Amino acid sequence: LTVVLRPHPQYVRRNPAKMAAIEAKYRDVPGVILETDFSKPSTMDRSDVLITDWSGIAYEFAYKTRRPTLFVDTPMKVINPEWQKIGLVPTDISFRNAVGRSVPLADVREKAGGIVAEMLARPDAFAAEIDGLFRTQFFNPGHAGAVAGDAIIDALVARGRA
Image (tube, rainbow, N blue to C red):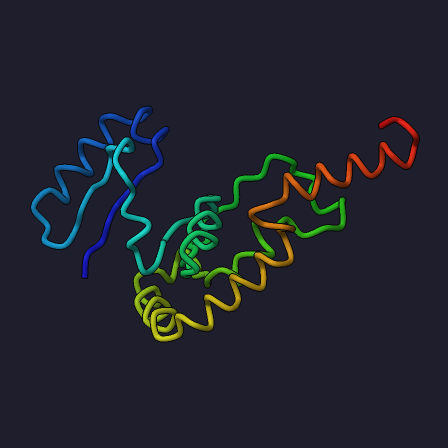
């Protein structure tokens, strides 16, 4: 088992003292890799599971690899404190269990291992869930520009502008 700790680039840039402490703590721990050189190809492509909080990297990981994410339920970063008045559930909430599973922060030590084991035991089920979500959110993958261009040209022709 290898654990890759890959902090956000802004965290690395803004917290050099904390990064130095993290590096010192895990430098000699077997099976732990601290990845802070973001110019190199990422280990994410080879990872079986991603563990994160509310980061959007989970969706990039899921759509690219078709593998699940374990979300740690830290306090949600809220830009609009009145978001509930809109009557819609933010995608950061509604998509979480489509691309992985969540664990309350207080339960991470006791439950994370079991949740990860369950996700690893069902890779095809998660790939299917991720594919299903992808199909509902993205249209004409690989040729969306051509489809959009055709639609614009058709609309202009219909109006006599082309």
